[in-house]
Image (cartoon, rainbow, N blue to C red; front, side):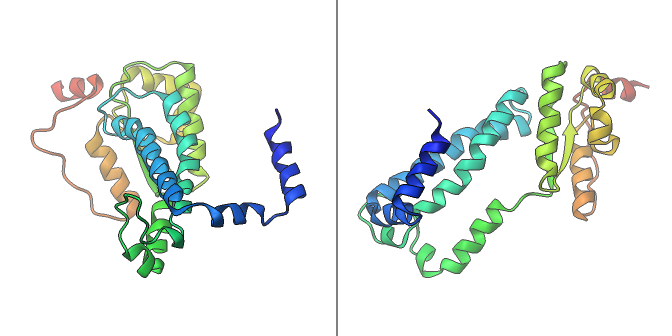
Length: 218
């Protein structure tokens, strides 16, 4: 079924104000449940991304792309549930009264959350080898970030992925200045982009990729 055509037909038949009326007539308890469900799903799909970013779970380019697509929709859904009618509802909620009494500050916080970040660090120290599919997914991720003028920094890049990136052209797209073997140098690159002072490497410094261990032995 072509859902786009169905949606267009409903809009023409019922008028542009139909959906607004539906939202206005929704029960407060239902709106609370909907926003809580959206936030629960946000946490579900953010979890693996945080794990990969922190190097706690292996990088999976397909999951990154899939979850990013889901979150692009979910990050807007929850806010629809904070209608004025849900203020003081009997439904169980942790929403503070300030959300409605200080609506401007709440809107400012939402805008800040949805604002694109200037830098993203992707830790791939658990990826000793990468194939064409993985390279393609990183390239797609890079292109999506660039739409918001966000810089991608790669951390924990092993030797095989390094050579694979050079052969595929991804090395040039990401930029040599944004590819690192450890998180400390990657963080300093992020600080440089943000205009912040660099921090010294921790002592003792423990390399996480083989090529840096080899350099330490020299």
